[in-house]
Image (cartoon, rainbow, N blue to C red; front, side, top):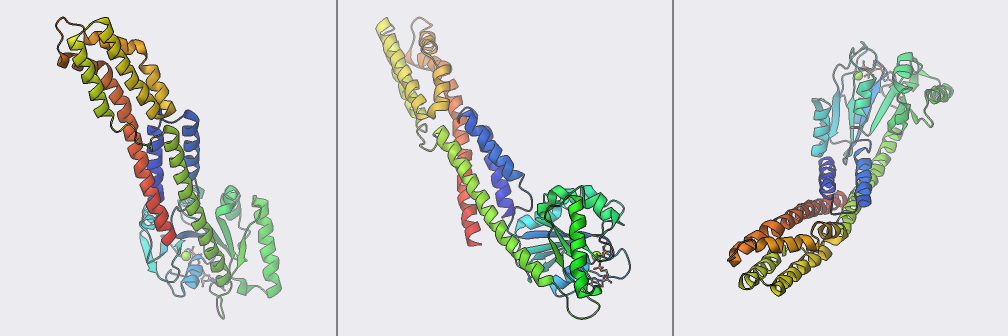
Length: 394
Ligand SMILES: Nc1nc2c(ncn2[C@@H]2O[C@H](COP(=O)(O)OP(=O)(O)OP(=O)(O)O)[C@@H](O)[C@H]2O)c(=O)[nH]1
Ligand SMILES: [Mg+2]
């Protein structure tokens, strides 16, 4: 799915770039604006919700992944730091888009899972001890993943590096951030809420408006993990939210294409018999002029060719129509007729050749550009229908 939507956006952009001169300028500008906003949409453009786990060393990122998985997929250790290279835990049945995303992020450790069919987790090394792990890395992750789950523990949730180097400068990405206060088994029950509120307060201080904090115990010293179900419940709701957003994006692409096509009147296919009709008008004029090059015959030829251009201008819609009228005014057509009769003893074939060079070729070029625009548009429309069908059946 990921690949589908992004490739479709590429095709839409190609259609937009080819629409110049065929669709009105304001329609093109609006189509470009809407396409840009689709491209700038945050997160992974696919049917799997991709969540990255970030945080300080020992906060419990790998333990959280293991708790979600119900088995040990990620190495956990009391020795710090532990996770050295990122690990992706992805649904067995994932789209090619997920592979591409992991390739882009250079994540080669991939564990396939059939526990959560629509959620993938990426366990990252800690933010404080890996030498080249810096804020830019989180920033570069953000357009690819749907969410970053920051895992903190009750001892280090005030950590300066975490707040000053990461969270505060990235507060604008609040929509994509979630927080897990881990190791709540180390706190008394009333203290869990106190610490949670204190964390919320420091996140507000960092610039977050409504930070979302889940209290969990991924790997408690005693007993079962806590709070994982609530976290997963929330993430599955996000899967639905995301599906709706992608459905909207596909519909929006459909609307952009329809408007581009309608404003250029390319749907009626009225220009496809151009060659045939042009040859007819050209050859008939050439034959008559070869027989008689007097003023009346010239007027007849002029009228026939003018009618041809005028009819074409109506069929190709207002934008290209105006261009045709502008580029092929009466005096240009008159000149073409005169140039067709430049030599003494003209024969029809030669006149036809000269009419072809003076009118046929330039008209052909304009229409060829329109045909390639129409073809790009048509293939994008077909791809949109296919994608919508796939999205609805998924
Ligand atoms: N008491 C308690 N200990 C936990 C909990 N979650 C994790 N731990 C312990 O915390 C330690 C660190 O856990 P990890 O999961 O390796 O932490 P990490 O964030 O992946 O650390 P790095 O890979 O170094 O970044 C381990 O000894 C875990 O057993 C929890 O909920 N409660
Ligand atoms: Mg780890």
